[in-house]
Length: 122
Image 1 (cartoon, rainbow, N blue to C red):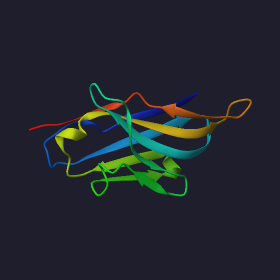
Image 2 (image 1 turned 135 degrees about the vertical axis):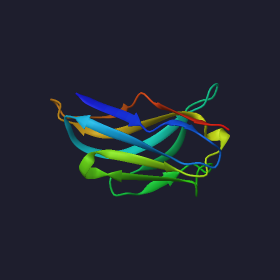
Image 3 (image 1 turned 90 degrees about the vertical axis):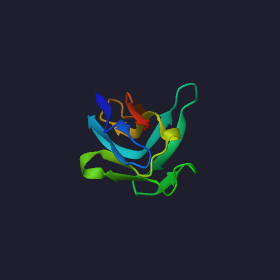
Image 4 (image 1 turned 180 degrees about the vertical axis):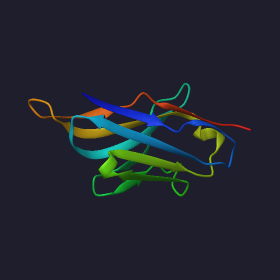
């Protein structure tokens, strides 16, 4: 069994900051890439940022310079530091993990969390 759980969402004023966490747990053999996505009401889910096992990162243009993705491989946890938040950042934020689980046979697949709400409003 593998679980991916996000935390850290909430209500913040424009210009404020939040730090999201994404923890993967269970029978994990290794985690390859992890990523953050978001979905605003009435819109499709979109990429926010990704990070590989060797810390190579990729960001959506809309968050470059404001958001920072990082991971702690020892804890199987990924973070998203969000600064200078804007109302248009309001969305449900989801994380995923591309991982190999201790299943028989070994199976590599993408696991998604349930999402955490981020609301940027005054």
